[in-house]
Length: 473
Image (tube, rainbow, N blue to C red; front, top):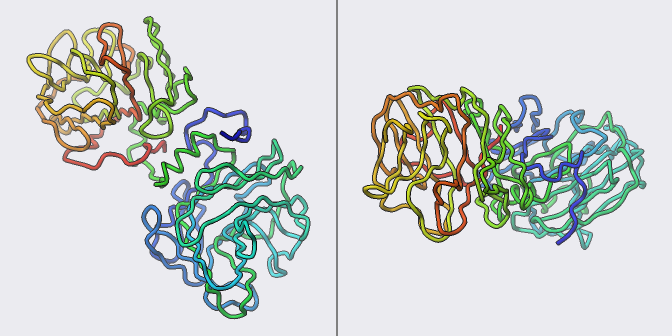
């Protein structure tokens, strides 16, 4: 294991990629401008012809140098005003595909870097990530504290060609280090001694900018770029793992119903952490229930993000966001158990009768249920093919216009009708991977990506379960 650089403001357990996020370009557009999915004003303008090809995730921006322009030494690239790039801590991550080519190209994958007179000259350099085929380690991050040519500091690493490569690069103003890595491996690090970077005020931010090659008119080296993001802080190890996603990557998929989210427990954090973070819009307080059990974040098992919730109940103080009335709602989670399932238990519930609960009943047969505790088993359906042990399953319940549906891994388990008022009776809302009155399984139980949405029935028919961590914006 390598030691990860100290995070900005000491946030080593942060698991919410929306914190400190400046921009995230999915780069899915077929041509022309590329839009920022995080904000509305960091659009990249296409200079020349930037087409689209099949990307690592969906589509990618295909950067081809074409004919070299004598005045700018580049033909096709994306750019915008670079004012959003500060002189302080910054972190970049994305996917690139570089072809092997036939000549020794040097090009700027991205950066705010003015090497030419028309853009402030060689004294206007700030930060850039380069690919230089002439180097044994062709991928580098370069920074400058004074903008002058020849005084830059750099860190280098290897970069495979003709395949998608995940890259990360950072400048840390606290440690004064720069680092670069590919495919979630250890960072190549250089201590620059720079407590801040040069402010290259007249340099634009560019992606795919070719500024040198050994052939005067064409360049056979080219690259594509997909899902590029930048933050104003250093990401943690778990956040790196989330971005890498076992080599599958993730996109910036904003949740169109995010403002309807009552609770979002991504269960991210360090092993044995007792800090439970609500990544929903209300950022609610989530606390351990003191009933002799010990809920913790564990890295022993994870569906997404490198960790999950296990060991005991966690509770959220009462809020009307958990009173659904007769309206639509969705509750969903990833669930895993070891051993065998036992008796009746709950995924979640209130604490003061009568309250609603969502869970499992074991009479007269195994069923998935919505219960108004102390009053009625309101909607119950047989669940003969419940999840096997030691596998992750996506479990969901939704109500749409009085029809309640239960799902496992996107497939409908069954449905029923209910216009009952589903409220928690002014009590706390409890998430229950384990409770003192009912041990769910003979082994450990894990919950991941637990989400409650009020006013929206997200699932009304068969669907594909989430393939990456739920969005937190």
